[in-house]
Amino acid sequence: MTLDTKAILALAEYLENAELKAQDVTMITADHPGMDWDDAYAIQDEIRRRKEARGNKTVGLKAGLTSFAKMKQMGVETPVFGFVSDYMARPDGGEIKHAELIHPKVEAEICIVTKAALKGPGCNIAAVMAATDFVVPAVEVIDSRYRDFKFDLKSVIADNTSASRFVIGGRPRNLDELDLRTLGVVLEINGEIKSMAAGAAVLGHPLAAVAMMANHLAARGQEIPAGAFIMTGGVTEAFLVNPGDNVSVRFQDLGTVSMRFV
Ligand code: OOG
Ligand code: MG
Image 1: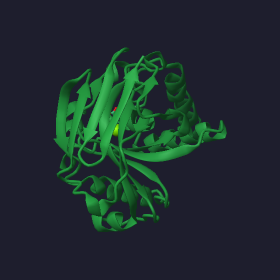
Image 2: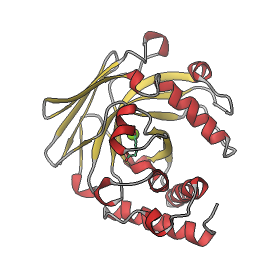
Image 3: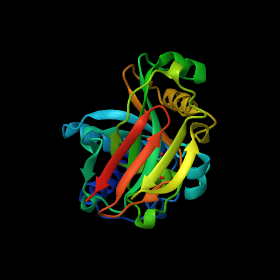
Image 4: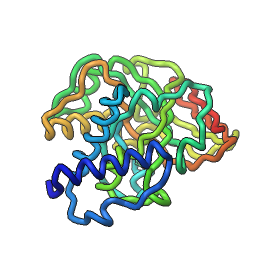
């Protein structure tokens, strides 16, 4: 840690206000070039504490920057971890108010719900398979609070990995009915195919993102609890959306997730 408690609290407030008011801000590393990974996650933890103190429930954990497409798009090489809150959820087929957000982008995600806790270090794909209750598809709406959606890793971690909205849809399936590596995903906006990918785009296997998350949490004295909803990260690159856009993502064997921006 290089930042004191006062700075952590102030930066959490700065970033959370930017989210809640939908106003972009400058990257925090510009003013705090020496901040480290622990500082970044401490700021994110404080944002989570603020939301929970206000009565918002933390309803899921997310991995981000786990696919090669996303790492390339954002110019980074390391996955990041964050959380989603109850108020971020929107129904499948529903509307998302664009004006509540800054510059939202959509991305397709393969998600799981756990039936047992996962504790690192040493967590691997097999352990994640054993702890997976079911697989469910989602679309994540990310909305970096940073100007022009430009950030470095520490800034985006502090900003809760751009978490903003998410839509769970399709149909849940058991893991033994699926091959998550070859599972195809087609993302369409207004009926036009924007991107296609397979699950293996996420770290070779989407469950590798969950193992990585368990090991990341272990280093911080935490674990993934049973019953946790976990998003493994965008399979394709993310796409900017505008008011009026219809987004529909088809997941092989898992159905479709759709939403409209108004
Ligand atoms: C960071 C969050 C990335 C994903 O699935 O890759 C993310 C960002 O790109 O703004 O959620
Ligand atoms: Mg994501």
